[in-house]
Length: 164
Image (tube, rainbow, N blue to C red; front, side, top):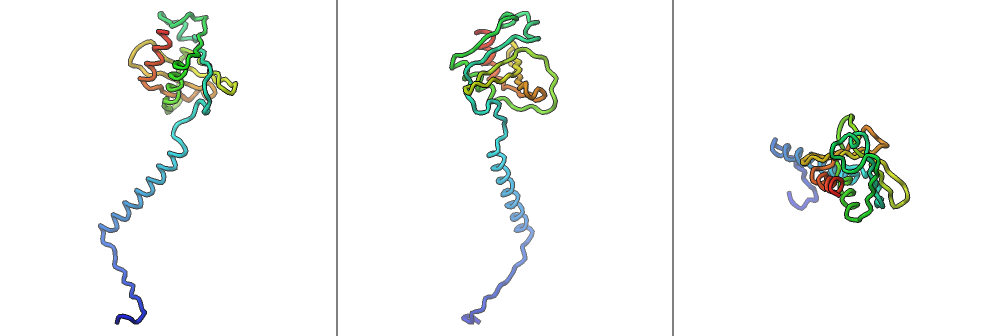
């Protein structure tokens, strides 16, 4: 009877297709929330602490000293202050991908970064003179954790270090 002010609530059971769609929607929503949370937290480590680099100094280390075609004399230290060169080094550091597992490695160069706030950071930088290879970056404060420098960025560093 209509107009009596009563409401009739009829619950229809969901069929299996409707249940599946509901379940998938719930899972997608959860995945989106997780992605947003992880994205806002950041997936990569900011090795530079959002600081600008003022100078970069490379020191020839063990592997460099034994190379036949070392980029500079073993006792020499090379500094970079040119804005374009600093930008290339910065990009290589920022695009380096955290590696999994514990590292065992030799040291080609020690890289000292002088930051805008007056602090210094020390890294191991392994960039060989062979093409088509990636580089290795290790913050000496956490020497068991390495970062792989992408091949394209390694090529740019190689150009600066070996042909500069």
